[in-house]
Image (cartoon, rainbow, N blue to C red; front, side, top):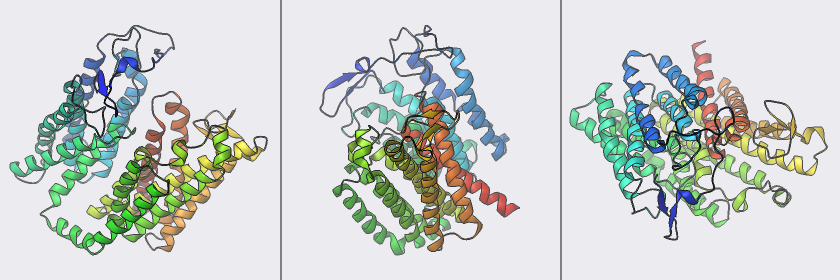
Length: 484
């Protein structure tokens, strides 16, 4: 957001200082850009709210299909227009769109999926994502005052996000006939805009499209239920163990930071995720997260020196940061809160599947890399590209191995067993969790082999989408079995 920014040391930095990226068209040959990168990017971003006007005339399923069509258009056909949609300006070559333009429809899909019975909230968050982010980029572009928390964000940009996003969210609440008076809708919209603007400041490498709109949507949902019977019910559910959740999760966060398992910022983010799971699913939610945390850290630490020598070990000595905490636990936390707000067993199934996928992905990656380093000539340890089947080096994005896959199956089965032993879920839902988790892991590998290798998505984006795929698949399978 902007041509210049201030780093944590207070020094002024420019985008032009960053390493040049070789830009190519779909054919691979350099082409001339249109010279309108900032304008085109903001125009496209803001115009992506227009399809939301169709929501009153579409079924829920048709709305989801619309977002899938938008994703495919942005991926396959939008590059044909050769519009420079990146933030890089002054280039003499066309630069293809990166992750944000692809993650936008993914975020809208998840919003529509989560808020199926209150689409007005999904539409209002859609407006925040379209208008707020575009305004932040346009007005914060040349601002000089930057936030110490995140020097890449400006005070002006944050204010613009909230002030421009607010009327858009308010309009969509009115347009989709959200319950409540005009004043109440204004209050709810302003709350969502403010929370989304603050969430955008999150100093993580996870794309803003995957953070800010969901924070705003959750705030608006809470705004609607605050004085209703459901709000009172939610309070009665969380009050008995609210203090317990804060103390237990706070202790775990402090131990994780002190023990070197997480960075300080990562521990704070992990605390929020843990409290969400604790309040949404009770002690069982926290136990599932703790199981994943232990599995992930054991797998990361196992053979760490050998993996580090091979250049495959996690950076920062294996410490998890804010981006990784959101990527691995964000979907589960959202599902747990959804369970608290009325989703019930669907939220529990989604949360368990998301954490099981995160466990499967983390353990399979770490074990697969270690096996590939220790026994590269063994068939069970060799890494193959998931789509092409050709042998690749251990640690390659989209690579899978027998050893890693088997370890992932065991990890997801272990987390599913914890869900069963704790009484959270029973019977067919346990099978659904395991199946959805490992299908989500496949989605993660496919995205790694394609969009991540092309530089369109980052690893944390892929991990977030893998957990989201597992959650969506789990809910879909649960509904199919129940309706069948």
